[in-house]
Length: 412
Image: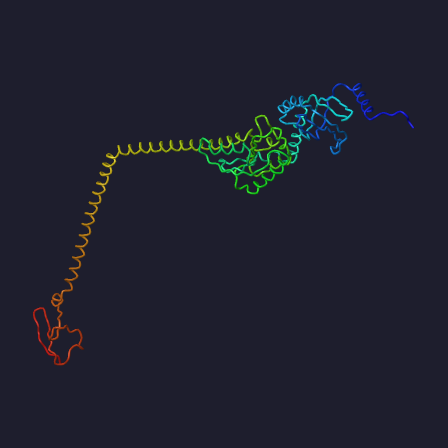
């Protein structure tokens, strides 16, 4: 059996000595953070991991530390550059020193960080999501929808307690044009682990009653800029592209950008910018209405002026027109009077002719003339004209009239 042995401390010290003598002072390391947390003492502890090419299994791990003084320097620089804070799941490029402690073992101390590497990875993720949406044929679907001429009914996806939501509603309610907007909140978590699920649920609820709304507004005010990475989601982006209503997105600050900004119908930077956009749409319609009103008023005024001119012209021509009309009517009256006199004369003459003809015919029928021609009239004693023998009885006294007298006789 071997007689020489070392203590654990001695062995760890030997390992530490060998590492310190053989390794470079610093290394630039590319890895993914599987853990990231800040302790109460200000130190920031991480775990670096590397996965296999399939991205499913870990092939390397190492503990890492950013000491408080270093973290207070690096963290603000990193957040200003990337809009993110260091968090689990992020890929980073950091400068580290290799440390080995007899008690705590192997670890990496972070002394610097390259934000551009993380920014490149975030941009790559967004590019991949956008490429997948384009391959699915839905990338521009929402952008091709038409906003209504007048947007008044607005479905809002936001957190009920968010300051940005309050600013959005306040700006709409107190706009300078007196425009009325009807809004309804579909509450959602806008930061943290449940962003994707809650926003998807809100969008689904709006889609179920899409006929009630003119558009959808997704807004997020306040909160850490780093939480915007929760919106870099394929499922959220796909839901936005396929909404039956135009979607307006305002979930960041002036320099922030998420996948939703690339797929929404309209992107604005902040909740107040979203309200200003909607108010501006309404103001444009008011201006158009005012312009149409002015044009209509002007056209009506021109029409009235034209009618006044025509009326004045008619009034000026009225005496001459009346005189001509009277002269024309007097001429017609004279013609009618002459025709009436002629017609009356012809009618009187015709009537006289008819009367003369009638008198002639009556004269021809005079009994006296008939008696003079050799005819006689036989009458009964009571003066009735005897027309047939049946009217006379034997012994009746008869009177026979001649032109020159009457002869009495008795019937046999």
